[in-house]
Amino acid sequence: MQVLIIRHAHAVPPSGTSGGDDARPLSNEGRHDFETLAGWLAKRSAIPEIILHSPRRRAEQTAQLLAKAAGLTGQNCRREHWLQSNVHHDQLIGTLEEYRPGGVALVGHEPDMSRCTSHLVHGGQFWFAPGTIACIEFPGRTGAGQGQLKWLVTPSLVR
Image 1 (cartoon, rainbow, N blue to C red):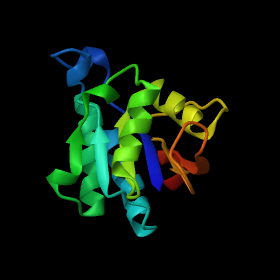
Image 2 (image 1 turned 180 degrees about the vertical axis):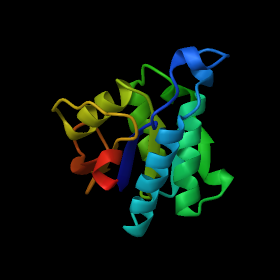
Image 3 (image 1 turned 30 degrees about the vertical axis):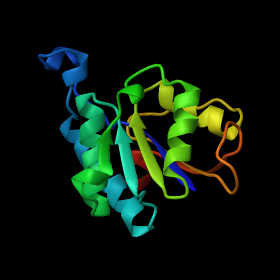
């Protein structure tokens, strides 16, 4: 099973949006950078079967860009409230088990995406810049510390 852990792309600052933090959209730069990165993923057949995202606007927009590059329908892109903040590891593992053996992408926020990555690969410290993607593979069972970090890429690497 392959899992993509994704921090939403660069968003506009909180002061630039009415509706509070949850309503912040992607910036033009963030949209462009992530479209490029999603295209890079599609060329390498690293596209998941399902994309789960936080309900915050910037995460949803990031997920939609990935879905478009992958040629996925709206049914393959789902809002998950547990990805909004303070992701619980039991929920994470349970969700991955639910979608096994297919590929899944999780689009959320920092510091949760870094913590999820560390939990799945059993250690290490990570920090995800906006738009960062980590690819974790589970050759056997899906569980804490059972994943192998295959690669980690930021938008600046594919510019």
